[in-house]
Image (tube, rainbow, N blue to C red; front, side):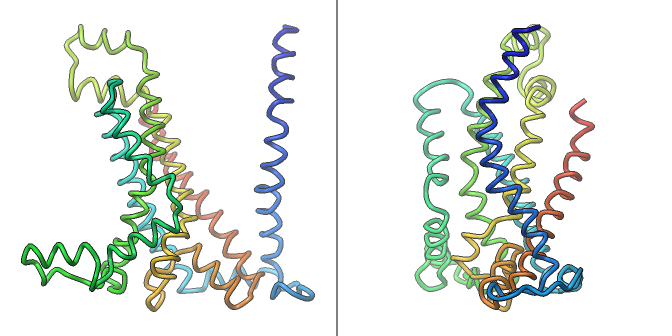
Length: 291
């Protein structure tokens, strides 16, 4: 009993510095930002208390909801793109060999590259005149398929979503490989003795044992997608005509371009609220399969 108390005390002491830093740089700024959402403030001078006016303006803004709709495209692309691709690659790379190390490094490499650099690279790829995509389409005789990928409102949000998917597959791949390797080998051996192989082993052994990990990956996908900013800002800046505006660029433009710090704080608070709602819905939808 005393040993357990000492262990718990040691864990608290060990985690306390990280908790204090996280509270100082994350938790407190969130509440501070929510507080400033009740003020009209340009960033300089005295802030004027205006109650819920900023929040009401956010809710009534058509641009905000268009930004949210665009963000939902990125959320869907991430959840149904990053997670399945990373899971499929993790299943393919279960065996420890040189090929696994090479592929794992290649997939994880984009995560090491600056997101600004990723945005610049894909901006050149999508260039209507010099870009690789249109060049390939022209080369194979599909010139009618060429587009201004980042300017055409019918496709630009989907074009923006592609590099975001590509950029963040790596971390989920590492997470899923670790989860698969932690599945007891006895369970798989027993399943094989019972005649389960291939899809049956995947459905009845592998997925149930890593379902909690998949749920965590979905939470990370949703929260990461709602705060996506760098690639979109570098490639389009939210344009043209706000057709690629997402929540983070909308907040940035209102805060730092027109100096409405109070309104920008209200937008950031709404982003957190929407993120929590979406995460809660996703966990409710996935809860049944965890049983």
